[in-house]
Length: 408
Image: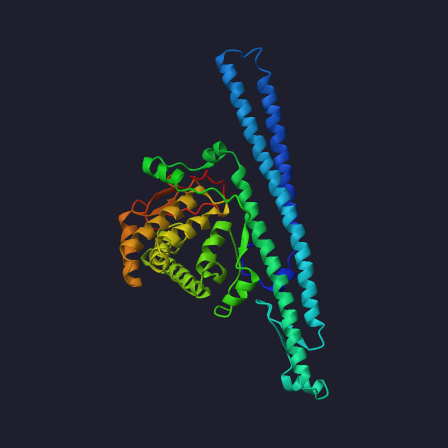
C-alpha cells in the first residue's frame, strides 16, 4: 500500500484481506521453520553416543547455533505477522473515520464536494446561488464558508491519519528484517571478492532507527507548505530524518517552509538528471542501480551541499537510509555515491548546475562511483562494483526490501 500517491477514493477502495493472508503465511512459515530446526537439533544433540570426538562436539555446537538462528528468524516472521495484523486493524479504523468524514461532506445542506487528492471542501453553488436558496439571507454565505472549512479540516485530518498509519506500518514491517541475526545477514549478502569493495559493502551500512517511524510533515506544516506546493504529500521518515527536515523547513525548529521548495527543486533536478544522461540514453535501465542512478545520487548530494551545506546534506542523506529493510548492496551504493556527491559539491561550491553535472559524469566515468551487477550472470547474487568496470547495460537490481547487513 505504501509508496503510491493515494487519493481519498483509492483509500476507500482498499481491500485489506490479502494483507491478512500474507501475515498468516508469514506466521505459518515461522512455525514450520522453528519446528523443523528444533527437531533437527534434537537429532544432532543425541549423537554423542556414536559421534563423541572433537568433531562430534563441534557439530553439536554448530547445530545449537544454527537452531538459535532459525528460531530467531522464526520470531521475525511471527513479528511480521503481528505487524501486518496491527497495521490492518489500525487502517480499518482510520478508513471508517475517513468514510464518516466523506459522508458528512456529501450529506451537508450546502451542496458540497471535496478534492480527491487534498481533501479541500468546496460548494457546487456560487455565493449568489447560496443566497437564493436561503431566501435572500446574505449570512448564508458565511455559514456555507464555515461548513467548508470545518468539514474540510475534518476530512484532511482523517485522510492524513490513514496515510500516517499506512506509511508507518509499511516501514515498521520492513524494519522487522533488521532483527535477523548478523550471521544470517552476512551469509545471505553477496560479498564481492575485491577487498576494497568488500570493505565498502560492510562499512557503508546504517542500522535501522531505534525510534518509531513517523510521518512528515504533520498536518499543520503540510497545509502551510501546500500554500506553495499544492500537491505536497506526507512521507514516512525516521525520527532522525524528520529532525533534519524540521531543522530545514519548520519555523518551530528554526527552519523556513520555503526551504522545502529549494529541497524539492533539487530532488526534482536530481531525478530528472538520473533519467536523462548519457548512460540512460544508451540503456534506460541504468537509472535503476546503474550509472544513471549513481549520477543521480551524486548530483543530489552535491546540490544539497551547495545549498544547505555538507553537514546537513550528510545528516539528511544518511538518516534517509535508516528506515530499515534496505538491501545491503543498494544501501552501500547509495551511501557511497551520496558521499561522492558531497565531495564534488564541496569542491565546486560556486559551480553552475551544468558544470556540476559534468563533474559528476566525470567521476562516474573514472570509477569513483558504485553500481550493482551480477558478475556471474543473470540470476546470480547481485554485488556492488566500481562504475568503470561494468558496462552500462549490465546492471542488476536487487529486491527493493531485503535482508540488511549490520550497520556501522
